[in-house]
Structures are given as C-alpha cells and as structure tokens.
Amino acid sequence: MMIKVSYLIPAIILLFLQSPVFAQDVNVKKAFQQAATQSRLMLQEIKKSADASKPEQVSPRTLDHGALKLVASRDWTSGFFPGVLWYLDEYYKTDQWRAEARAFTSFIEKEKDNATTHDMGFKVFCSVGNAFRLTGNVHDKAVIIAAAKTLATRFNPKTGVILSWDHSRDKWVNPVIIDNMMNLELLFEATKLTGDSAFHKIAVSHANTTMKNHFREDFSSYHVVEYDPETGKVIKKTTHQGYRNSSAWARGQAWALYGYTLCYRYTKNPAYLKQAENIARFIFAHPNMPKDLVPYWDFDAPQIPNEPRDASAAAVMASGLYELSRYSKNSNNYYQKANQILKSLSTAFAAPIGTAKGFILLHSTGSKPSNSEVDVPLSYADYYYLEALLRYKNYKK
Ligand code: GLY
Image (cartoon, rainbow, N blue to C red; front, side):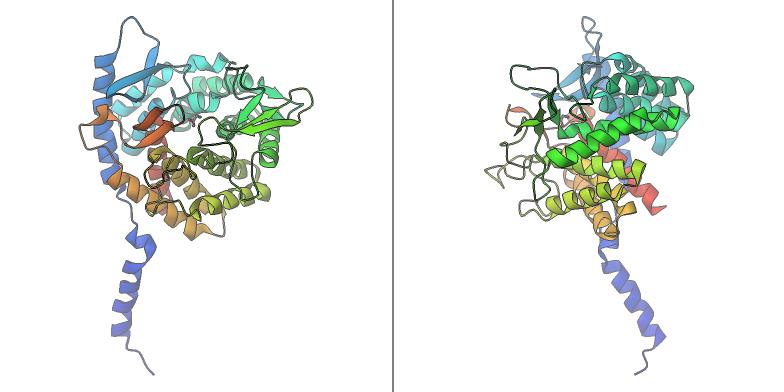
C-alpha cells in the first residue's frame, strides 16, 4: 500500500512533538532570568545582613527561620555562591557578573591551606575552579594546585582513602563519607595542570576503595564508612544525615552518581561507568522516587509521602545525569530523566521572584536527623541547578 508523503510528514511531526525529549524541553532562558533576578536580590541581602563584628562571614548558605545565614570560608558550603555567580557569568558574559564572582571567590582562596577538612573540592573547586575554567587566570591555577596539595595530606595509604572528618573523634574513628567522591575532581584536575600523577593516583585509590566498601548489593550507598587507620580494615558502616544506617540518604546517592561519572571522565575506566549506571538504576527504579524525580530526603524515610523533599539531591542528580548521558549506551534515558528533574525544579521548586532573600530554589533538606535545614533553600542546590541548566544548554548545542 502506498502512503502519501503529504500524510507522512504531519505524522512524523506529530510523533516528534509527542516524544519525551520534546515534551520535557527545559526553558533555560526563563530559568536563568529567575536565577539572575534572585541573585541580584541576594547580593543586596548580603550587604544588608553583613555584620561588621563578623567579617569572616562571606557566603550565603541557607535561611534560618527566614533570616539569611552567612558562613565563613571554612564552612563546606562557602564555594557555592561564588560558583553560582560564575555560572551567571558563563551564561550572560557580562562584566558585572564577572566582577561579583571574582569578589566572592577572593574570600574563599585562603581555604587552599586549610588541611582540617576534606571539603576542599566543594570550597575551592566550585569557586576558584570555575574562575580558572572561565578566565584562565594563572593565579587561580596556583590556588587550585595548592588546594590539591593540601587535600592530598589527608590521604592515608594504609586505608587507601582520604579522611573526611576531624571533628567528633569520640563518635567517629577515621570516617569517610560518600560526599568525599566530589572532591576527587580537584585532584584529577591538579594532575592535568601539573603533570604530577600523584593527585590522580590518590583519586583513583579513593574511588576504588569507596567502590569496594561504601556500596550495598543494590548499589545504594552507606553515608559513613569508618576505617582502622593502621590496618585499613572497615570498622563500621553508618549514617550521619540519613534516616538509619541501612537507608539510602538521597543526597548521598546523588554524590555517588555524580562522583563515579566524573571519575570516568578522567580515567575512562569502564568500572566507574558501570558503577554510575548501577547507581542511577537504583535511584530511578526506586518505588519511593516521586514522579517529578525530586527525591524525598531519604529513600527509606518512614513517613513517605509526608516527608520533606531534597531539591539539592535532585539538582546534583540532574547535573550528573547529563554528563553520564554523554558516556553511556543508556544515554537517552539519562538525558530524559535529567530533563524531567530540571522541568520540576524550574517550575515547582523555583523561588518566586523577590522571595527567599534571593535563593534560587526552595525545598532542600540539609540534615533531617538533626532537624537542621529542613525544607529550606540551600546554596548547593542553586549551584548544581545552574550547572545542570548549562550542561543541558551545551548538550543541545
Ligand atoms: N557534604 C555534606 C552534605 O551533603 O550535606
């Protein structure tokens, strides 16, 4: 039977319009307009709440009972607002955003010498790392290398991992948290910048050891694994921010997904790609994942669906998925999932213009077990949301 071409063309157009990719198109321009307007408000709010007696408080972290909470550069979240400003600079390419980004980044630089924490990547790479990527400034390069050297001092060859926390030694013995996967990007980059393979080797050791010890059979991740610093043996697997030791804390799963994807970027080791794919399968096949793909704060939280969401976990997942979709055979599936997340965040989770003291997204959860930062804006949700939007935009290109 002959099908007339005149019937075929509208049929193809109709099919295309109904395809999930088209249906989940994300309005990047509108999302960035909201982010820029909110960030201008944030800059005003920071000026208003600056306290002359606490000059060390430099970056917005969250709202505490409606009040803007600023933190010092040593706080693990200090690099995210400078990073938001760099992403606005990347999108708009105006001197104004660049000047603000540079000013807020300069407050964080001194963290390059702070060896008391593993959060170096979050602090320095999200701020100075983006500055270097966008400007090529040699001073930024030196800061990145110095920060990687400092982070490397926390690596223990006996455990094969980078120590996460120094605090609460009465509670934790040599703890490593899944979040620490995010700091590996700084180390991989430092090897690229210096040619010194020592940083790369530490990152690979950390990723391999974490792959062995942090994951359950279903590829969900524990939050905290404690090691004997002398023998390297695992002592305990627990949680700090999750519902219980055996549960799947949502942001932890997001850090793991993003972390193994970035490890694949730098190594092309298929084991890391497989790991990221397995983590993605756990996350998106989970019966407690809501239809809008913005997870509850823990996949095993007892009162689901009456539990707070975590938009920050969703933003990290979306950004990680766009990268994973570039490497995986399952590309279209990851791409569509990321689009769905961005659609949800940009419509139902975006702060109405002029509210939330200038944060971009609402409804994140920092630590539910300590009743801290529950259902609030968080600077890292904003950071990974803008990163995901840019990845979506560049992917389309
Ligand atoms: N890295 C700390 C957190 O995800 O809350």
